[in-house]
Image 1 (cartoon, one colour):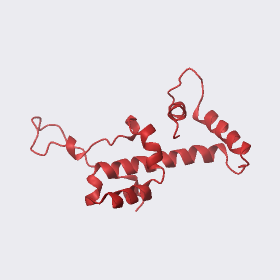
Image 2: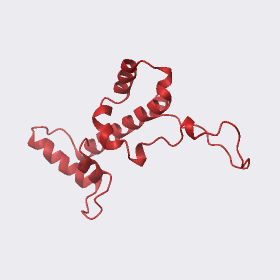
Image 3: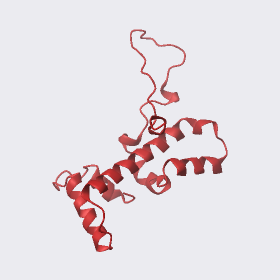
Image 4: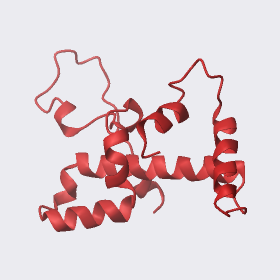
Length: 133
């Protein structure tokens, strides 16, 4: 997933290849087998990639919320690594994907009132980290 082309394939960007996530996961299982790793199934690969994507999004959400009050760069990096150990490897490939962008940030909120009072405000989304608590 750290390779742009691989992640584009996984996300369905190569629409003419006919590759599904299941077929790509089967391909990955074959490559793992070529390296002597035989205990992973297609389902395991799909699950692991989903877990990595969710942890990356959680780290993005945490960072977009100003680091939860932490200003020391070393502490920020440690917390990001705790949330998503692969964050700094994946960031270059995944950061511009719509699926990894937070839906609402504090910059998006109109703190001074709205011109259209009939529009309901949305409750904040719980991060994956908060859901696991």
